[in-house]
Image 1 (cartoon, rainbow, N blue to C red):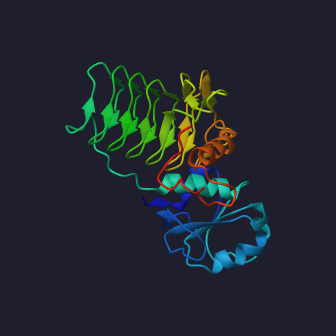
Image 2 (image 1 turned 45 degrees about the vertical axis):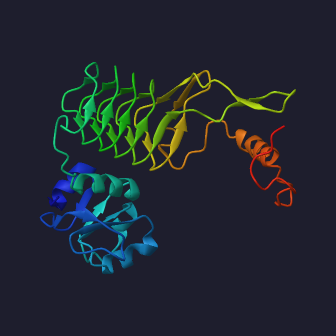
Length: 276
């Protein structure tokens, strides 16, 4: 989206040095920048490289006020990287998503959709689910029974939200994320050595302003509510909430397949799991 530097500076509360009529429409690294791109510099030692680049303008820190060479317009701010992130959001072209409920989607009659909510093709919204205003449910996503999703959320294609999960406002879940599934909870019977599944009866709650990376998994609690807050605002390739389960599961697999520590199968065990 084309915007003048004057408009960008006003949005970022930046001090503009140079021609405010110049238009930009994107952001880039210094090495890849084109004449309509913005770049940013956090350290004075990189300033000259940015000024020599093809970028249309540079977002810089207050140190640039002392610079004599101003080969291109500068946007002077307190926190260049943060301002650059905000500029990227300001300049990006939002994809065309259509509106309303796609005829190839399946939305239960008891589900409640807020104003301007969008449900894309092949998405499924279960019984009693609630979708907030301006929330987008991408193609092939599955929203389970009783799920509550806040306003202004983006759920990309093939996201699966298990029944009972709750999500706040402005949550972003990228493609393939699985939210609210069972954790790896097992109880070992000391008499037989058999592992039995522990009930996964809790719930997952995701707070406002959380972003979840593609193909991530966040399990629900076994008995309690498992909450994800935006103290680390993006969760990529999340481990299961109970990380200590991994060694136990590894031991279980070794016992069940009778794999010794050297990694070789025991004689007579080549055809599958050992039965005790």
